Image (spheres, rainbow, N blue to C red):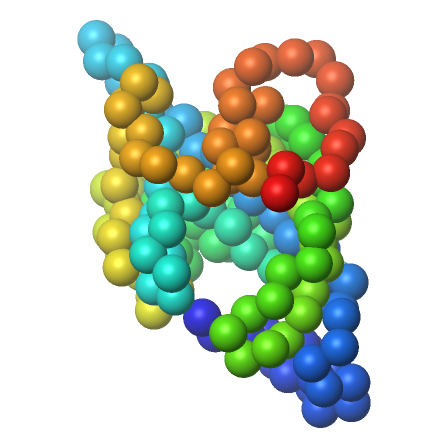
Length: 163
């Protein structure tokens, strides 16, 4: 997975120690007349797991801009942010290179606007829409993101990610 340049520069100073980063995730829903609603997922190239569109918020970028950018980069689709649905603090995530991060994640419900999903970069090996009743197995934190986004509550849910 490509690491943003600003993180590489930080890592030169702090090594593998914990970084506190902002992340953004898009639950992208496609609703086409006469068909059931579908959710966009990508299969990660590093661990082959299915996830919603996710990314690290770049310096000076709004998290809502991050999900729009990441959807275009990762799955070659155009999306529109509907609303913020959840903010969550992750546990410590340790990557295969021993880098450690904690995230303040901003989860958004998004609407598909255009484009058929396809792999757009080396972060994923597949990109496609799945019917809501036929999602592939998901890690608990990703399943929770989708669950909250689709619940349609008026408030933003604030919580820790499930482990």
